[in-house]
Amino acid sequence: MSSVLTLIAQRVALGIVLLFFVSLLIFLGTLALPGDVAQTILGQSATPESLANLRASLGLDQPPLTRYLNWLAGIFQGDLGNALTNGRPIAESIGKRLGNTMFLAFWTAVIAVPLSILLGLLSVRYRNRWPDKLISSVTLTSISVPEFLLAYVMIFVFGVKLGWFPTISLPNDSMSLGQKLYSISLPILVLVMVILAHMMRMTRAAILNVMESAYIETAELKGIKQFTIIASHAMPNALSPIINVVMLNLAYLVVGVVVVEVVFTYPGLGSYLVDHVAKRDLPVVQAVGIIFAAIYIGLNILADVLSILTNPRLRHPK
Amino acid sequence: MIRIPLAAVIGLFLTSTYFLVAIFAPYIAPYGMAEIVGDVWEPMSIEHWLGTDNIGRDLLTRMIYGARTTIAVATFATLVSFVIGSVLGFTAAVFGGWVDQALSRFVDLIMSIPSLIFALVVLSVMPVTLPVLILVMGLLDSTRVYRLSRAVAVDIYVMDYVEAAKLRGEGRGWIIFRELLPNALSPLVAEMGLRFIFMVLTISTLSFLGLGVQPPNAEWGLIVKENKDGIVYGIGAALWPALSIATLAISVNLVADWVLTRTTSLKGGRE
Image (cartoon, rainbow over all chains, first blue to last red; front, side, top):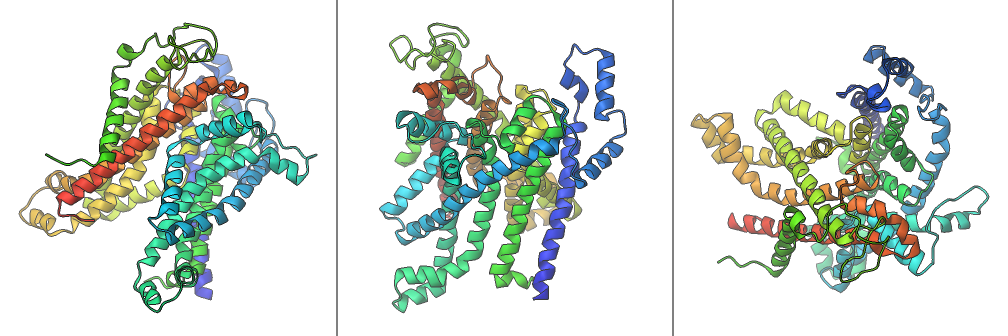
């Protein structure tokens, strides 16, 4: 058991090192790029005095290393700096929005994960027959359309033409859970469609891969029922790749959520990021960027850890 | 005469139609790109096949010019991504050792940030112009091409004919261009189709977010952004790009599939 713990500790440590380099990359990416940031923010007509002022308030007059270390130290103390646009602490604005984004992502996952595994199993069971072909052509189409367009098609059909769901998602604290869920039903539907397609196709591939093995053929020759073979012979071996698929897609959700939040004007972290990229509010972009990267890396580590736990072969690296 | 499967014929036909429309946009479009020719959101008519947009421009014209921008940006970004990704990938495979390690770890690092987030972070400090967009998209995407071409090249590099070339004293340039490249071409070409589609989705997403192609230029994602307010009134002008992007994506996919199966069957059906 201790070897498992060591392996997991290694993965987590690796993730932390990675996150450290990512912070460096985001910092360099925003402050060391060609062009003067202060000039970009103020535009060509800025006076030299206002440029100098802005540089001083951004700390641009200090050497890059000092700036980076100050920024990093701030993050560890929960201080993400102040937004340029309204001068208020970023951590304050982010807290609530992060919660909103997590709420959306959580309910999407609750619906999408079991559904995709079920559909994956179904399409393997009826491989190359009409249920499989139907599922795979629907998922192929939904992969070929970008998230924001899928969202507008959904709004047009279900929100406007049929009038079933609200087209703008503004949940607030006075609502009950049911009302909140109803208000975000369209964004959830869109996100489910987007990640369901990827997840279901990868689940199908993972199970099919296992189904080609010799022991499955043996089970078939023994006369075991098809569903029993899938459930008790194929599933345990397909579990580790499936968990991996699920985690990777939840990480993908982090990106999908950005666009969908903008479409539905949902007060989450993604729409906050896009707003402030347009306003060139650097401290906010850096802060939100590092948070998204941290979630993404965190989910990937979780995927690694879970596959170590579910797949004994990974516990004994050669 | 080569027999082409029906799916590939449809794919080839639609893909080439889109590219022709993109190239000859100024000659095909019935009106000027930013010319205001009618009322706001007119319905479909003989004069305006798809109706007009949010400020009274002909929507068909906007879609045609949009195809031009979208396809041009996606094509150039794909080229940037392939040139950089495959050169670095082959280099890593041929040189191995610390070169390989350094490149691969750096690519791992970049890929640990979701590429849309990374693009947004970079675009917050760069001016949003077409060359910058092409470069940012191409560079971020080259990480995927790098991984594929390195993996393919590492497989080929241990083949006997490469060994033979090394023994007769060929240089690294010869091995990369005359031994690795021809044999790695078919998976790379198939991947190229997928990367191109991904680029189309990326540029239209960025434009939709207001951080890609800027008005008055036309771009499919931008058309959605401009006309999205009509949707709540039941005006579907913003939905046309959905149709064009989906058909383009599916037809390019069909062609890529066909290229992959055809080139592999040429080499004795390596399935």
